[in-house]
Image (cartoon, rainbow, N blue to C red):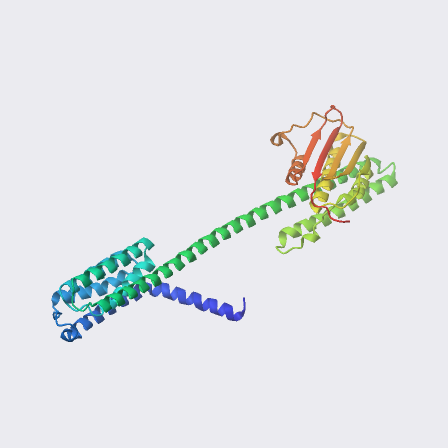
Length: 407
């Protein structure tokens, strides 16, 4: 928006606010002015020069004229009642053969107000009623209402009603657009809040995977170093080097993830987005902890969608972390198979094993496996884990991908 447009929008808003504040006083001023001017028109006009049949003003005609003018005070708050009172007072003045004067003009304004501020049915009813009244008065040959006056009055009444109805329709459309805009804004806020929650959950899963894997490696290497520190200095130094390297990597990744939480405009590219290509380094780190891990990659190797790549990496990472922490195994097999619709990932060991994992997610213990299943489900994949033979443990996942990026 340019500076000029912003200034115009501000001025429009200021005028709209001022109009809302002055609206009650404006209608009061209109009603008082209408009453005064109508009485002046009634009293100050030489009726004999208009139609000899017209009677001079009397208290009844003056009172009816005053009430008709004052009824316009409620033209927006009570449009139907205001219109009814106005028409009734006009009939009193006309049927007693008094000069209606300015009231015939203000009748157009009253009909416009009814059409603009009441329901459409009320506006149409008011228009038809007035046209019938004019026709009836013309048939009774009331003073100051000839054929030309009747036709002119009907045309003006139709114009006043059409203008008021157009204003009412526009106001209704604006209200509808405002309602839709408010609904869309509420939906956008809800989606934004949901996106924030989902992003926080994603970051929490990433932090869990980073910290759990790194701390497991550190714990294993610390145990190894403590055990051989006097008997094998070289092995102890190697364990300390692995601890230092693992700590640095974990710290770097953790800082990147926390940076996403602190900065609203953080670039997602700075996040640690590992892929299947990084599995060699992951496996090498676990080997340094004393687990003989074999990595096998089969099928037509290609670069998949970033979410698929990262999830495959996390599945292997979490599975190897569990091997380190729980299985007591000395060997593990990691298999990555590229298939036509995605990639299959399997991690198996021959450790202590356990009972097969139940299919119901609600009965699964351990946030790591729950997180893996949730990651896989969000991508439309499947994940199974357990010890079918009662020996060792196996994690197998299929990650479908309809998005394949050219390598």
